Amino acid sequence: MAAPMLRGCCLGRCWALACIDSSSRHGRGAATGFTSSGKRGQSFVAQQPLLTAQKSRKGEHKWAAVVGLEIHAQIASNSKLFSGSQVHFAAPPNSLVSFFDASLPGTLPVLNRRCVEAAVMTGLALNCHINKKSLFDRKHYFYADLPAGYQITQQRLPIAVNGSLAYSVCVGKKWRQVITKTVRIKQIQLEQDSGKSLHDELRSQTLIDLNRAGVGLLELVLEPDMSCGEEAATAVRELQLILQALGTSQANMAEGQLRVDANISVHHPGEPLGVRTEVKNLNSARFLARAIDYEIQRQINELENGCEILNETRSFDYKLGCTVPMRDKEGKQDYRFMPEPNLPPLLLYDTASLPAGADPQQVINIDRIREQLPELPSETREKLIQQYGILPEHSFALLNEVGLLEFFQNVIKETRAEPKKVTSWVLNIFLGFLKQRNLAVNESPVTPSVLAELLNLLDRKVISSAAAKQVFEELWRSKGKTPSQIVSERKLELMQDEEALERVCHAVMEGHPQVVMDTKRGNPRAINKLIGLVRKVTHNRADPTVIKEILEKQLSS
Image (cartoon, rainbow, N blue to C red):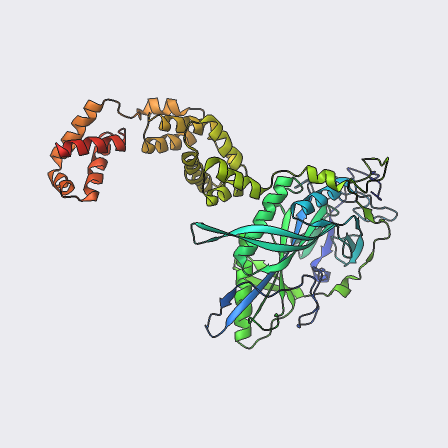
């Protein structure tokens, strides 16, 4: 690599909170590729005709929507992109700021090897072409949380281009049919993050925290191959899983490690594409879907009422469920891009082009990173379907919840129950309890070993399904108890004395002659009512299958 991998910065130095009066604040620079006028200009993300069409509210015309995304993923690295300052979420304000991060005179950038490797690995996983030579640029805009007055990015020649991201959308509410779609990836580029502005509306001032300033980002520009909020949210969720599987980003949207800007326009099919708006800084897949769908409908309503769509930046108010204007779009010329003079071209190699005798610590081998690629989510889902015979929608559910797949696999290892039964319990009962209590998988009081023991009791017909659910509920309340202890204490074992069960069935039939008569007449519900009555008498300790066999035997005699 052209840039040496050495660190020469001051760590641990604290900087006081900077106070900016909000009345004097200027608008912040937006993403590249838009003109400041209301007319559609040359796009940084080239628009394409839409895949699907939507009907307008009035039903007079059909409208087509175009959705493209710009995604910023924070790179999982111990230090920042061009300085040795540590990266740590929720650290005290301005406690992780080096001289370079504060843009003190005479400081120079030193490229972080880990960030480059993360960019290459992400590009390979997303089927991108990795440029062996890429360049750094300065993107100028003036804002309080960007001390240098410019951001170091890769506008001219990014590190990866021409990739693709496959994602799956469901047809119908129950995911019975899964359709795979693909969105093209225009480019992936390395760039710096900005600091964070903390607005104090009560005092009409803004406080600046530079801990995030200079943190390494991957900006992924997705071509506008999507048509609605659901598609965009699904694509982002798939990308999130890929980044987490690679380890290149934790991609925690709640902590700002994955932020999305959506570019949206509508037009009549066959006509020129419409003027776009950009909805900035969406940090939730759910809010992303809501914002896009709202903006599509807003634009349709505006055009049908004879209004024009302004080329502007908007934000999403999740409380009101609508987008609101922020500022006019700034064009590419506003950023005054120029080559970064303090960084030489970034050179990468493959096995064939690697210089003889090159220091492995000073060069990056693309082929070596390719060999280190882990199993991707799509491959994991296919393996789950083949190995355990589960439904495709279940494979998605297992991966979509952090830690749930590992929990499921650990249960499988320790139980004799069928994988389909384990899947049902994990997704319907275990996950349901987590959702009700707003808990993560790693916060559950029920461990995989405990659930496996409970399923073993159910598989051996020691307890009924109803009793197993009672035991599960008790496990949440009584941490430390085993399923066997709870079954014993509450006397939930299935009745093993078949003669006693026959006597109960006989007594129930004598006490409900009309139900018996309906059963003999062929009413299918009547036999189920008898089974329910027997289970009630036995306090759900009788196996419904055995009860039915005994009842049918006694009815036929």
